[in-house]
Amino acid sequence: MQEKLRIAVQKSGRLSEDSLKLLKECGIGVPNGNNQLKINAENFDAEILFLRDDDIPEYVQDGVADIGFVGENVMLEKNKATDIVERLGYGKCRLSIALPKTRKKLAIKDLDGMKIATSYPFILNKWLKQNKIKADIHVISGSVEIAPRIGLADAICDLVSSGSTLFSNELYEFETILKSEAVLISGKKLSPARKQLLEKLLFRIRAVKKAKYNKYVLLNAPNKSIEKICAYLPGINSPTIIPLAKEGWSSVHSVISESDFWNVIEKLKAAGAEGILIIPIEKMIE
Ligand code: ATP
Ligand code: MG
Image (cartoon, rainbow, N blue to C red):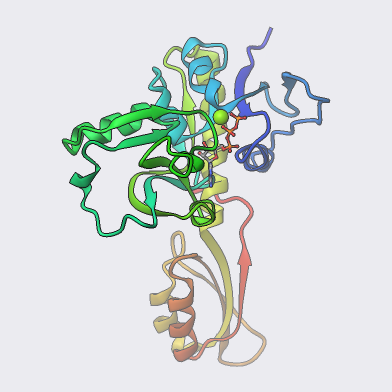
């Protein structure tokens, strides 16, 4: 029987939707199972295991799952024997120390002697040691942000994305100790068949990621400007140039990265480009 890659995904939470969407973009369908723990994927030799995110690193270490989609923050906190095989670019957040608004203008060393409430004792302890601070870590599993108000702690160390939770609890972000995003982790002892399936999945994930960072650009330009325009458009190899029916004009096709995009567009226009179209790319394989 063909071996299947067992993929752990957060059952319900901030990473669930984006993880399933990425699998879908990789051509791997996950049928709607009514609250099932395990489900067979469509179009790929894989089984999807739906778990709490906290459990994913351990299950991957122990080989119950082969790979897992999880926040880097959780992966580092659990400190299990797993490897990051790909960074995924979603689920971005930071793990930060926050203080009550009434305590401004502190230096890092002022944390000495404080009581800090967190669900991330391992990462926090490591950071405190690196910064030679002796603080008292108080572990709580949820609603960390209320700890200072009820007199449980002087400070907190918690995940932040927009900062609105901190704001509504009269706290401010004092120091970021980790920047995190979703990562794909793998166990260390995959069978050759499962390794091969993982390689196949990684190839697809990279093609999807690459496509997201790039745009397809189409434009018309007078032939005398083509050389200048091509210099702004490196493309994968080089731009494609097709003559237009209009005498002395050509159509130029190329790929540009999302981050260069606005700068390049201005230069292209200045060089005489017209009718510029920017089109999203679905998959990109070099
Ligand atoms: P579970 O029930 O699976 O244990 P959870 O409540 O621990 O879920 P979520 O709140 O769904 O976890 O967050 C999952 C991950 O999403 C976090 O570990 C983190 O990597 C990422 N994340 C992104 N932004 C935020 C944020 N603002 N707050 C918390 N987590 C965030
Ligand atoms: Mg959790």
